[in-house]
Length: 227
Image (cartoon, rainbow, N blue to C red; front, side):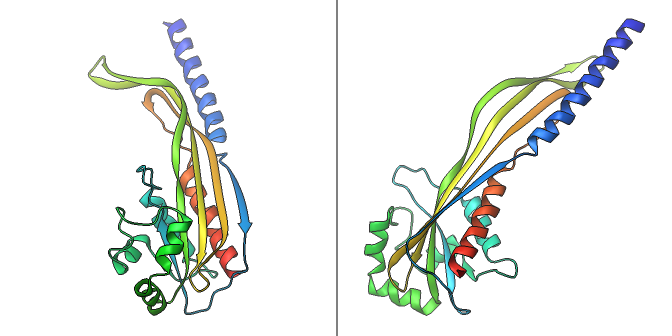
């Protein structure tokens, strides 16, 4: 009985030490930024930035939740910029930016921006820049598993260890409506490890790579446009 208690205590102490280490590791999300400027930028107090989601012919689209996050964070703070969201923009320019016919590259965007009806609508709404975002968050190198079962006393219990690497990679092309040119590209890449250790109860430690990439890219957009 004493030996059983000893091993139970040892297992508990090992789990606590392991979880403490995992919390420290999980908290480390690495984010890198890149910027390529093609022309000078600036924005007036009555001008608006449209945050758009690039639509791919292959169906690989950047997530709507990420685009909404960028729009929200770009408009917040002392250096916030007036923003029209992806869906608002699509509704205002129906049907030209519906997914089935929306431009899929810069050359297509140049062509559609020459349409007089679109130019007039952009001017009437005060839209100066289109920020076209592409990218995704992926899960890689998943290892281990967590198994759950009902043990003595009809109590559910889970045991095991699951881990994976999360990568959030996004790029933003900034388009100047007034000059009908691309003025630059920005990118944010966040990486981190996520863990789900389970000793009776699963305790997830999730690397928030997407939220880090969102905050990073939104700050870049504001700084880039207001420069």
